[in-house]
Figure 1 (cartoon, rainbow, N blue to C red):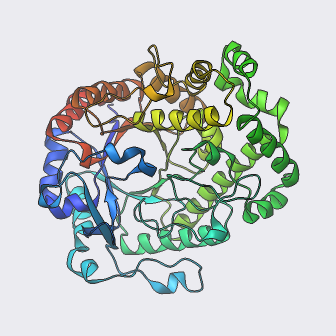
Figure 2: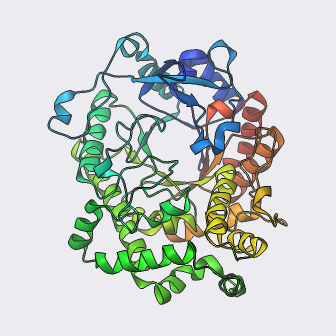
Length: 477
């Protein structure tokens, strides 16, 4: 008996509005051969720089080189936009909550139907249909919009707020964030009862910057530590000591010792527990907070009478998942699957941001040693890597990604080992030159027996859609 591997593409509503539902589905099925699609519960319109946000996302400035492969309105590959919910939220579900849904407006009433139309049309063609929503960024419809109030922002070990962020996530320990997310789930499952699954993005603490790896020391996290049996003061003290070590106390001797380790990333939790046990404990607590978030999502879905709706989050790959709190073994108890992000442009961006911060804070260290240590720990390439941070950057639209196929395979294998028997999907990114995308897409299909997701339609020109179809030919065995 044959078993079909899932091949999914995320297509956000602006393309349903601009190209049309049937055109998008024709492209995805006839060219890419998809078995599943994901969209989000909003609609979009043009704005200006004062009232809108950039599409595609600027990724805290590093991603300003990124352009759309599929132009939107007025033929633009870079534009400023604003959004509205695709449905009229049930305000009673959010009564008394700190966070409230975006209000339905004229665009909701004139264009919001396109999302329901897409779900119906895609399912009529035999496709599974999911919603992609944010796990901890109210109102949750789209990554660039919304975010927590100051009280709910994750904190650094010294109690300060982060200076820069890519992911505007709230604290996973905040009851206000959690209550809103549960209300959103109830609302979406009532408004769109036929949806096949919810793909939550970032049910973790995304470590795009070095500081972000040291979350969370908010008051919410302090209360959670007491409830979960963790020593908050010890976690705070050791995490601050480690932060100071990396930001002013790092030596070439440290880097040489680090480089002498055979399996640096795998040994990291052991090293951390030996030297900074409180910081190691914080990583464990983050994993518990992520697990509780996902468990709450699953329970809410079940309480809505929707046990068959899949919980299918997306998350960082190892070793970033150690820092983010995404424990694949714990997630497997509540999730139907997890998609592991193979986003090469972010990998080089994160390495560069970590390196820039540590080099500036430790002026006596060797840049080449630091770069070697970061490449070894993050394990993002198969080839000779640069020796200078200036040569590591967010790739432009015509530049290949630094990620190698074997490095991607190691990350997927590590996640699969932890997650068994839960399916793990490689989540490839469409951004980048066509032939480089071919290489990355082929690697994703080769290393991910459960299936592949591709983010997202806006970066997939017709040639790339054809590549997905060519790579997917061997995916149904």
